[in-house]
Length: 511
Image (cartoon, helix red, strand yellow):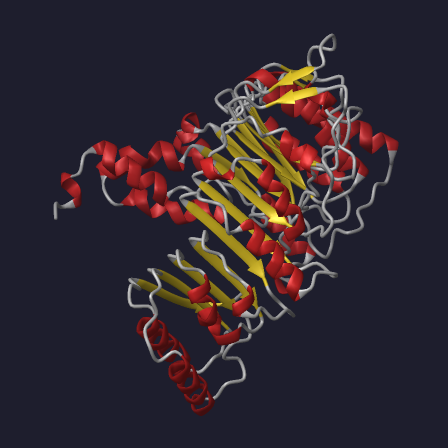
């Protein structure tokens, strides 16, 4: 093996991009990347533009829907986190010239206008922002800011809008904008709305995850990538030229969505997404599953087509055959569906056999029976002939009789429940082409002792004493935290014995 110093600069940079990939997410991750710069001069020269490409103001949660732990969530702690920054270091060393991205992660406490004023002052003191192309702004949620106040109401809203305009003037070359927040605060909504309106015409990429509305009077002819959360109707949606879009993710919040926002030519009823290769339609909001989904309605007068769509995701969307028919002529290679199993049957409208991968993730609804599950899953997984067919299912509170299911087309199976009968080994003969099995049994091993674990696995060893004819090569087992030490070894021995082609087995905690 060659010494690392013998590697070319291009190879090292590929390695360093992976090592520093999370440095732009928050200040904590950025600090974790700093040691790479201290190894030697060569490493420093190769990584300096990767590490110092991001200016960070604030150190809130990485994801806006995360909650800070209660014990570090006092008002003073939040204030200190909001003011944490790497900006002083970048300015004092002159490395600000390498910066192309600005990440502002703030946690409002009582009066959000004070936070907006702080952001403005932090940016207004310097004139090194012309190189910034990416602006990511998050307002984080804690137990302290469910109720935010304003002393002057309308005046503060106007002030928030002016601050947004001032920021847009200082960061005048931004072409990628990401705004994320769960907070439904009038002042913050006004700030986000104004900022979005100031930038929208010049953006190439936008991630819009806020209750704020950009407005239908804004237009864009440059967007190639967009994520629009809370996208509701043509009154709140900006007008986007569909021809340039390459990747799009739509997350309507209400039960009505209109495609009118992509009707750039009002004289035509045709909406053609010529360049779109990736499309995701979702109704999941901040990790919350919506069992009946949000219907993506069609307007009868519009002709919508996706002539070059390759990857389609339908997450918790209450789909109908009419919706699926939109993509029947698209050259799809990957389809990902998450929702009720009965809705997944509509996917058969597509030519599933042409796909390279089909993934179906489902959970049991309130009315589905064991018999209905078996009938519907058998209907879906007995005729698909893709290279990869993944079925991920939550079987909590349900019992699957292995003799009632037959999934010959499945290559990957993921089961999730508190307990799983025989750790899914009884299903193995019913899935002859399976190569990957994941079992997430949240309570398996929780109340076991060393002796009871021995007895449990002894019963399974006797039941599955003869090796199967399975083609499974990879297994992931997730069990309860705090299980007996011998539990993992006993499970490993059982699976290795029963699955003769097994190459890799991994065990971890089910969380």
